[in-house]
Image 1 (cartoon, rainbow, N blue to C red):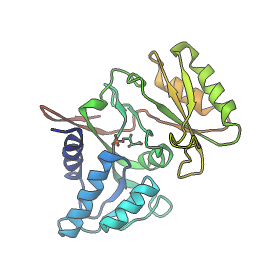
Image 2: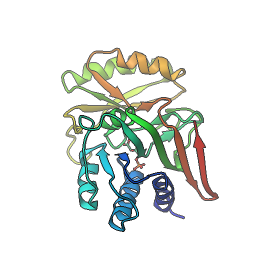
Image 3: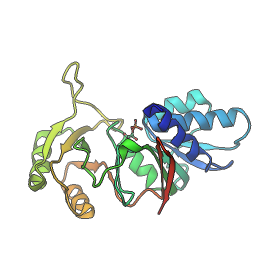
Length: 235
Ligand code: DER
């Protein structure tokens, strides 16, 4: 099975939890894309009715419109029944790294307003500890003096051998700009960053930092699709 086929299997399993009449947080990324498509398909077939989608990015907003999913936002639906979204990393305690697609702020706002948050991943996303993949831990920052913010973030985690890099487009070196007109500083760790709540609080105390990609204790279910089948973990 290819990685994308595993993503689709996890996504379709998550959509089995969607019931007619629900307000659904629609995730962002290549795994969540399959869930959004599937919800649109079931609506079209009449197997699901009266779904309201709350998109976690402009990209998902566009996809949901093309799938015919009625959309709204948190202002009109401050309580969301269920969110389905991917992740870049999942640790053994169901903590997540998200945001390598740049949508972490709206994802976190919507997923923090959910009664249930189902995280859908293929098995390659499983890590022993967050940051353990050696890949980016995104932090959304205001553009004003982003270099200053990047330096501060690097110094916060110097014991973990942290490297902080502004996310730019490879083709022209221009800064990546989020849906909220902010920049992303990607953090790379050599070692475990220790207590995630301490790390989160320390980051969020820095003025100019909007939010980070650690989703601590937020997923209520994690669906993992692997070569040997599907694993479902519940909080
Ligand atoms: O950017 C995001 O938060 C995405 O959900 C990401 O975490 C997962 O993206 P993928 O499903 O394309 O791997």
